[in-house]
Length: 453
Image (cartoon, rainbow, N blue to C red; front, side, top):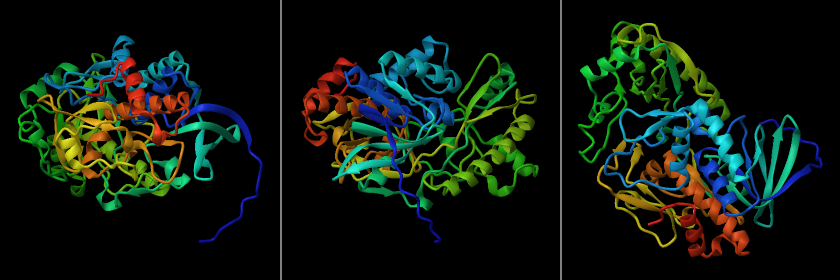
């Protein structure tokens, strides 16, 4: 490959902070709030113009769609996201669970308020382009923005990029699912102008279950108890569109779920486009799949207009700001979670929170309807090969099955808040992240309302 040599340059240090969180999705937002509430001077770095990641930028609004009557749920800042959204008019009842779907647009403001209330320093519109590493220790990051190239120094860094970007570029050991085995990406979108009454009547007249997910591109492994439960699943309108020649036959992958419908006729969180083989760490693949995903979404909208009662006069309301990625890099952690941890109620002395037995990915769907749950271990966020760094969210160490559980947004808030608190406690006690007194971390998490056992 042809190369050029960049001119060496001096970069201004614009900020020194105790804890720097890179990425503001559910994990990063929770990490920054947890760190600040634990007393650390905390900065939250985000490449886009709003906080919230998957919620606000991708449009994944079904934050806790796994929750049912007997679910033993996580506690802490993740539940606070949902409750604050409800209180601020930024949520709607979720159709398949005992939860509320977040309004992705309005949650941008909710996130602003949470960040400001916690005393987190917000830094939007800055892309992390390189970690600052000295002698195996991360010292901060370099960002690029309209303001140019800038350096931010930090005593502790939390990688909440979702793709372990900081960790990988800093030299920490990471691995990536082979492209052909990655979970599909999605282009999320919402519609307006839906006749809610007629749409709901149609859904009630032909209710779909999780068993109906089976077919086309999907084979689903369940525990059996999920098979007859209601799911807001749509496949029939797209089958009709294929038969009519509106949708090409090879796009039998267009199907999936709707998230919520408002009184005003907004049908949101339409998760109908599934793009296999998209590596979210490759900009060319992201480009191609963003464009292809929007094309497929417009086909899906036309199919809904023609074959779903209540959608005849509907139209596109908005696309997510960016494609939704489920699966790229994970760190090689001090402890890498395994299938039995999430399938058999794993328990850990270094637990930093719990998450219901909810597994969704790689053809597995197990819902937490019986009260079963697992604990999330702190060690899964400690990467090998680099100091002063924690990795949180969907990039924590683990195998395929465990990733299908911990990647879910509420679980990302669990690991995120744990990471933020651990970073703050390590500074307070002047201890390395891998030598921290976990009981002190757990004590602070309990003070912040987290359930760890």
